[in-house]
Length: 291
Ligand SMILES: *[C@@H]1O[C@H](CO)[C@@H](O)[C@H](O)[C@H]1NC(C)=O
Ligand SMILES: *[C@@H]1O[C@H](CO)[C@@H](O)[C@H](O)[C@H]1NC(C)=O
Ligand SMILES: *[C@@H]1O[C@H](CO)[C@@H](O)[C@H](O)[C@H]1NC(C)=O
Image (cartoon, rainbow, N blue to C red):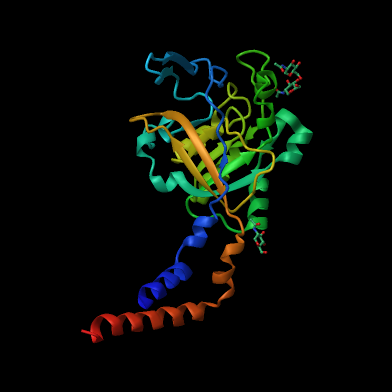
């Protein structure tokens, strides 16, 4: 009995409980899918049809809908295969690329000044590295232009004069080249309708990313206050077989300092070694010598 208690305490001290506690406050970066979800002129808008919703005579409820949508509508995932014949299709993306480290470059000040002409440049990425340290393997980069605030006003969000002249901030060609050269960034997401500044002008940066098997996330909902570093991203596109893109659910989980972690953090490493050694000896004595 003593032994069981001892093991329980030990398991608590040496377990990953602390790491789990750190995942306490997830943030949803997804816009809900509605008939207002942004879609380009060649795609089918998101359309939800109520098929059934009724209370039957015995008082039980039954509701069911159908939806129809293009792959590239609203908050969505662009698989490399969209513009790269050899690239991953949606169902082929490795899970390591989808559950990944998140980093964010914040362009609040520049966008305030330049509005729809604000672009991500290599110097912004270099500044991020100088401030936060080297980029880790399997990282997803979010670029925050603070454009989500316009999402509910299509005129402001798309800056559209007409279908062919959209204008909003974007990622420059040189920044896209910088990103793929790291060979560590597996995906890039933006809080605008497209990676390139005004999509009908060009898709140069998007093509550079997809050509290098870096996936692209568009129409993200990034809150005004959101960390620049130290968060995990769960990038979960609908697993469409052979998909070129898909509706996306994306959730960020910032790391937080948890006071319950104090015990582990305060106790120095050699205490763990001593505790583990004693417990192994205890186990050996109990199990083998007693027999
Ligand atoms: C969107 O913003 C424009 C410019 O500020 C404004 O004129 C228009 O009324 C807004 N539309 C809606 C639906 O709020
Ligand atoms: C940016 O927005 C301004 C003002 O809304 C507009 O006049 C201009 O044409 C837009 N810029 C581009 C590059 O489309
Ligand atoms: C956690 O604490 C460290 C050290 O006090 C601090 O540098 C860091 O910014 C904190 N992180 C968060 C997410 O609050």
